[in-house]
Length: 77
Image 1 (cartoon, rainbow, N blue to C red):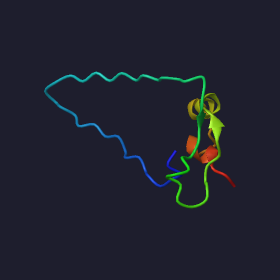
Image 2 (tube, rainbow, N blue to C red):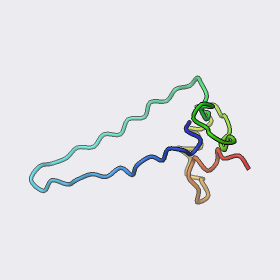
Image 3 (cartoon, rainbow, N blue to C red):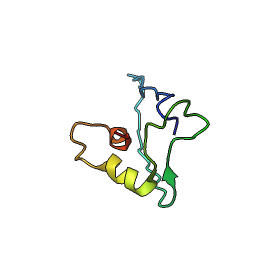
Image 4 (cartoon, helix red, strand yellow):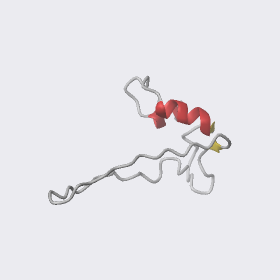
């Protein structure tokens, strides 16, 4: 959505040796809508294509990313 202008931070966890930790993953899948760069944030040319949320999530959850991140599949050539 930021057209590559804002990078996400790596998620890290601090381990507490004295207390057990529980991690729960939750995926909220929106079947409608699109993922696209926001024009007001994209200072230069658009670098990523617009795609449906369902299409992006299929790529994201795929084990056939061929050594790429899911976001790399959304880049325009």
